[in-house]
Image 1 (tube, one colour):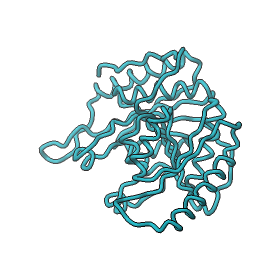
Image 2 (image 1 turned 90 degrees about the vertical axis):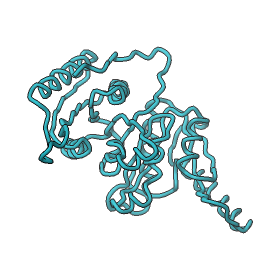
Image 3 (image 1 turned 135 degrees about the horizontal axis):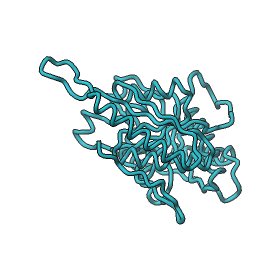
Image 4 (image 1 turned 180 degrees about the vertical axis):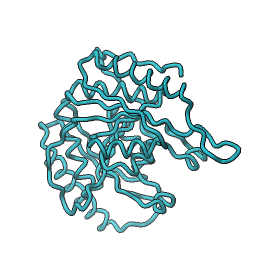
Length: 299
């Protein structure tokens, strides 16, 4: 998905990189936002369509993929809805889109297309953050997935993300970094946070070591880290401190009032992380796929 912004242009570099690695076909989509019914003069609509067609052709040219490997089309409507519908119609394996940083107030009032796509997508979503201080077209620097951070909370969702990350690491010969955040358990009667017991901490260490050991049997370099604090804080701080690119994590995709009040860790990380975030949801496997066979432990 592209809106022709500097941020979207930066995301193109990740699209080109992954498409070349996996020999993928890229479908470039631009959404003309329409909220409610309003009259648009025909001459202005035709002009916009011409400009959009020219810009889409330029995006396809910049991707520099083999002929036939890129399609492009404009669609009109609500971006988040149509992006997900297009992904479903194209049986896409991955949605890639840029995301701009927002202030807390802007987020509360408006949300973002990326976050809405995250909750509805029929496949994994890679969000690429706008580069700080970038103006115009960003410099096209080589994209390298050298170290990938995977947050683990031992849920099926996070283990699916780890399974997905292992397949990418095997293909790209990258390093893998596992992170578990020992978050505060609950508030007590004195409104003080209760922390995990020593027994719980030891159990987490053992389960993290078990996962890392299993992954190392595939010849993958993997580190394991356990931190304290809120998950989103731990993930963002770890990514900044270890130059990870990208973060690969699961998303539970809450909806309705639950989503409004609680949000999700994936959305919080997407909002704050300086590196790309790949949220894994409903990923498909190809014929001959050999799963790592990770399963949720009993804590």
